[in-house]
Length: 276
Image (cartoon, rainbow, N blue to C red):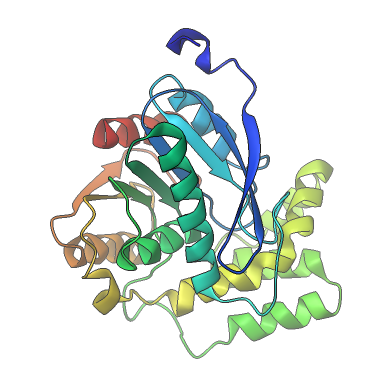
């Protein structure tokens, strides 16, 4: 398969077994060094930024996009623990290393960046790590007394998946109040969001009150690039600066014109250049 045709070939689909026996589904596309993508909240490999980004990078990397546990074609086991997600990523990285015979690069966005950072801090082998707007907020900007986990769990227990999505987007993340209503006008999108809503408590646990786990992340030895969009609010920008300062030798960058929903055309070249 040539580099010119790599991006047009259908991804190869497979699954790996995590440490607790959970099946984690992935798809592989492209040729070259291995790159694993870790999605944020409410995304699967079929719904979200993974496939467009993989298509953009498939001429330079063997890209692995996977469904985080409880999403898409991946399995799930309770009770949940962030460590299980770290183990899931470990299993995908190990598969990518065996397939390509090379060290593995990792890109994580939003809560997926949180998972990737925890994995790097745990010593899971990575060649390079790129994060985009990891789920932390600078001290003093958030009311940490609010129990968002309990609120979302209560809505899900009542079968109110749509309300849980709305709460997460507006009350937690700070999206405009009209956003859930706007998304309801897109039935296919709304159906996907509500289907994956039961995994929101997982992301909330990864976020851990938006607190930057400085002590753990200061042990990361992986060369790391910390990215943020120029349209990010001040608390997010400050947190990414603090993250870059925490990880020894980390570099940082600002993507012009980008919000939290970063364009693959903006972030792709940064991933490629840093991971080349």
